[in-house]
Length: 401
Image 1: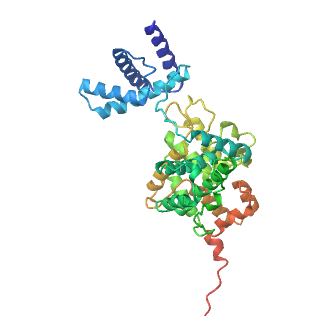
Image 2 (image 1 turned 60 degrees about the vertical axis):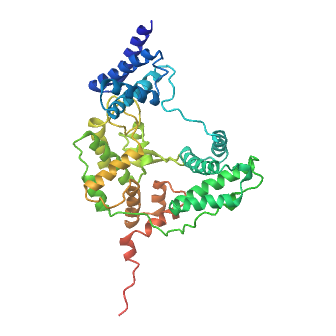
Image 3 (image 1 turned 135 degrees about the vertical axis):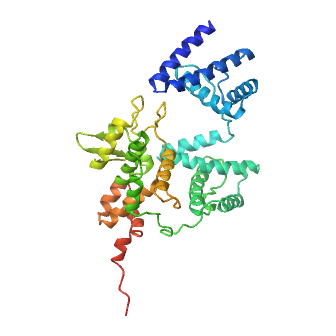
């Protein structure tokens, strides 16, 4: 009975992998490791599904390597992805599978959950911003736990020590962001009755003078040079070129570009619908010719046909999940280095900054550009005026003779 159930499960997983576009060699290699792991579990008298965790997979791989007298690290690096992929497929088919890496519950998980619900429901904070806040607050809570300090005994001295500790190893702008999240959290604690006093006023964040550090912007010709360095004869090249050209042409952030859906492109109407991640506001923009051609090339000859998601940009490897911001950032840096900019700290956000600066230099109306960029206040665009070199030249007075 167990053999028949396993054979049925194996056939269903095999069918799913083929539908997702896994290569035949990859499927064969995965199934070999699954069979070895199952034999190991049977010999130990354990259930294979219950043993589908990373710790169990590594233990099995080390045992297999010692028995076959092969390199342990090689066996672990081969068995782990095979069994992890099998575990995900089995879970998708309705079987109860343990967490691949069990997460230990933190004592403040419930508190953070209540804080998140409060911010989400009563302050309208978007999920992306809320995740950033919770990461910052988690640092503070772990700092308190290491010192065995309960929240009820919190004083301004503890807050000062935490901020000074951050300032010794992080940039001032990063510390200011953490302090802002900490202020919101301390107000919540007082409102919930966890702390007797509102400690938010005691959080003294670093003073960041507006405009003290103008954004890093590269000349438009350098951005064009980076885009030209992308090999559009390859599948990845067509995808990356379309995504980066989209960001450079419209001033999108990576999150905006990678959240685009296939349905956001109106080919007949020649328009593109963008949803701002932080505000949820939709903006409809004209579909520019070069961008449309790049997207067409990617959709016809680059995007995997086996991809199940409606997200526009996906990974080339099965099961073709949506492309991550970090992955696109790494690839952009690689293209910048191949174009000869290895000494520059470049990230994809430079495309948005360059687009804004270029619009300012071309004397585009500030209100129009701000609406496209999703700024609530048009004055937010003023920061790019300070790096618009050509426009600033017009303000220079001649040197006295």
